[in-house]
Image (cartoon, rainbow, N blue to C red):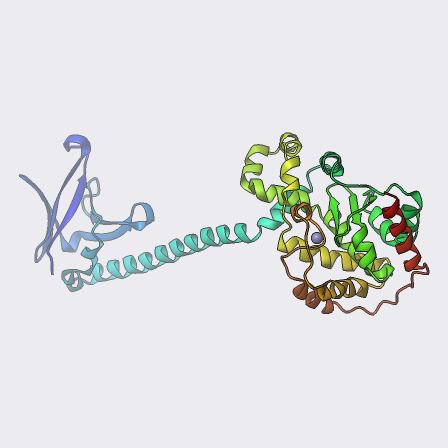
Length: 373
Ligand SMILES: [Zn+2]
């Protein structure tokens, strides 16, 4: 067993007020020694205590002479069997050991809390992004969407036929008014594009391709797709995606409580919005929210499932390059199979209202409009 420990003595009479040297444990006393300087405490006068930050030091006090402080950071001194020969010291060491355990518990708790905090921050990232997105005025999203629409329409042939929109609005009246209760105005556009797709722009523009109208078999199927697109708008997926892309922490630090700072950032991300590929979570959330909108509007939501099944039957759905870039109805992630299964688990007991409008007549109307373009 070692009998010597590094120690420090503090006293106002010493040069610098302190001296470091060695604590030597002898049979009846301990002695601090540094060159010619010597200071001894009889074990009968000794008191042992923990102190310092995190109780990391062992203080060796002289009960008879308390103006002098002697301590060591070497806790192994507590294990020295010599102290066990003195009842009072035995008690002191027991107390020290209890204190050591307590400190350890507190330390572990702190580490646990800090790690837990980091973990929960990570997992609640989406929550923060949503909270932050909700601070951004809808009008900013709208101007970003309008700007994007102007860019896109140079590539598209928009079907300018009033009765197409009239018929469509009539059939989707209930669904659209469910959305408008959230104070969002929806603009509808129909474009001549043979591939099967529809997409939404931030702020409320929804673009439906003629190929989708052609492929669908009922109003319920088309409204299923529409409800999904509307959910992208109401759930602010574009904006949340952008915040996620540029980094939540960057956004928070630029904001420092001031939302207007984000205006500049958002104004410059028109290009970024266009390159937003649909995220898996957003697609699933849009399916789920869209389903709920359909139920609320008393439109049979099975249409959403049956349209997915129609798509599955297609040999291979071709996505045009343009469509891959925007949050469009068709996406490769998640796959259609998964989306169908998720929706099939959402059973509902509500009774639905049949849409009493001839879908085939509408299809024909769109077909004719594409031919005259
Ligand atoms: Zn989508």
